[in-house]
Image 1 (tube, rainbow, N blue to C red):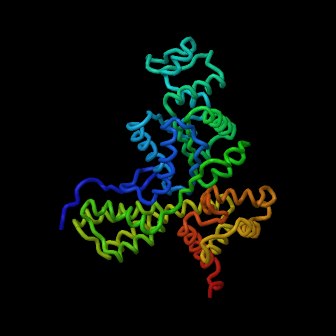
Image 2 (image 1 turned 90 degrees about the horizontal axis):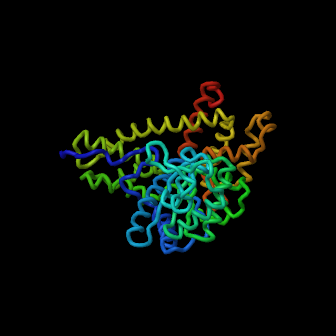
Image 3 (image 1 turned 30 degrees about the vertical axis):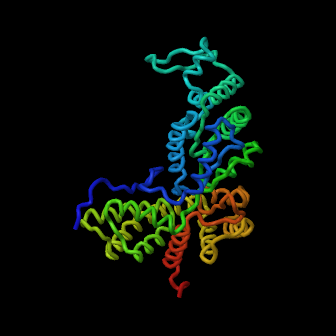
Length: 391
């Protein structure tokens, strides 16, 4: 027996930093390389686009990047990060107010700014500078102190705002170390292709996918070991397999295992605790799955999703053409009349039921176990409606 001290280090949720960030060494290496370049005053060759299904850890990686910028700034040229979402900065004016520091506003436009309420914030008045002046100011500021703009949930941007932002980035990068990082769900790539900014195709693209088995094991066992909690290799393998190597589920498992160890004052978790934790994880995971399934049903995409899930039970990847055939065969006639098969495909991608990583033309399941859940629920429904059909 032992007393497990402190708060649970595992925090399954939205963008929470895991106690051990495992399996992202490749992505971190690419980001560090770009930071080193702009810290040396070299403009990046392209924007950075980061995408993947929800729960894979995109926001976590963005937060890591902010921390990394602070570390880099201690040894090289100071960098500045601006972290945002489309809801925080819904307009270019609000974004410009954040991108250009108050010092530079005072320096460049001393007669065109005024103190806001309380005298603690500098804002532009009605004679604010035009877009060309703003871009020029951003370039000058970046030459002195490079700026990294992180736009999370980028797939929710308004097209006009996105196009303007991409053009600003291109102009700034031609003259100064300015880096734009766009992060979003799998639908981000298609969204960016619709805003008439062809140079986005030459961006640095990072796909945030599920972890491998070893990284999954490390993400679970290392934080447990730091609190004096051990788990047998066979039991750990069982946990790793059940997690589907999906970062959100990894945190669910870690949280449940840590809670049980603390509750029972155990230094070593046995198969009994694994089974008990599995029940808790499965309950929360089922709620998660049912929300996804209900969304597909509301969109009249559930029959197509069921058919796609059946295909993925026998393969890990499939082609775009095969997916379009399945969708065409499993949509109501009136649905096909109002939307094309390709639009329905993009809807399934936006909702992360399927996705294709940047280094592949083939599609994968967003979460394999979600597909199994969709199939199981469909079998239950068929059995209730027509038990004899399953005999």
